[in-house]
Length: 88
Image (cartoon, rainbow, N blue to C red; front, side, top):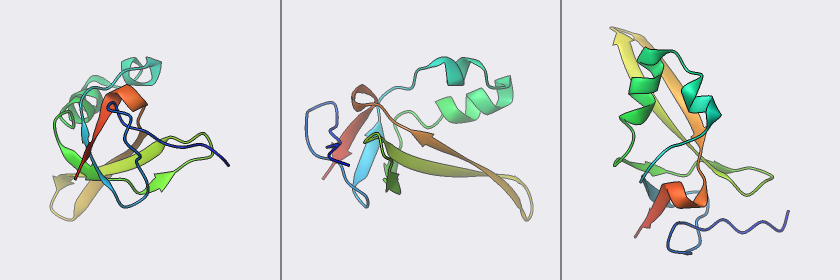
């Protein structure tokens, strides 16, 4: 593995740590349907627990939205170093 995950301030990020999303970018975001894109963009400024670090050293977080009673959908997204800040 060998990848060390860092936040925008070069602080180490690992599974279980909390990060605030500062921004989101990438072609994947542009390709989303408009309603999903709005949900994803609403994550900016929010704090999430890192659930996983992938083989490329990218941390993954998840958010769930309630569509209607008893029905949810979620997005798992990976973050780049400049997109997150460690919350201590």
